[in-house]
Length: 117
Image (cartoon, rainbow, N blue to C red; front, side, top):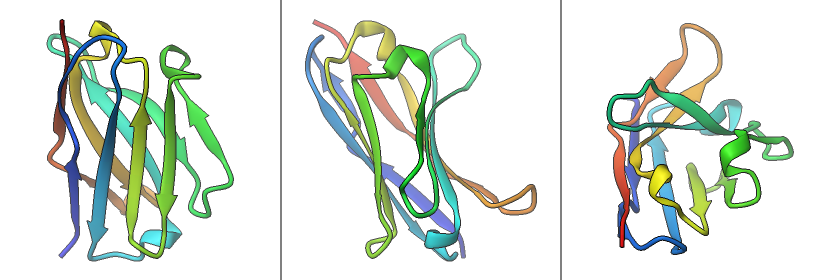
């Protein structure tokens, strides 16, 4: 059974940091590109970070470049999102996604990040 379980969200003040984790099971994690998405209230889901299966390629959405870092540990079947200098506009539900083609597209349940004074 495929599972993606996000954790690490919470309430943080502007300028603070959080590290999200996404633990994967039920598929060959090392074969999949991994992605972090977020959806703020009233907005569509947006892709914010991608990491290749081996971890050597990373991409970021412009608004998080320089503040967020995606990483993975294939030995632990886990992908991370280090978020620094958080802003109120980063408030959203954050989801991890594993994708290796249209038939291999898995989602976690999400973890809420709230940035507020």
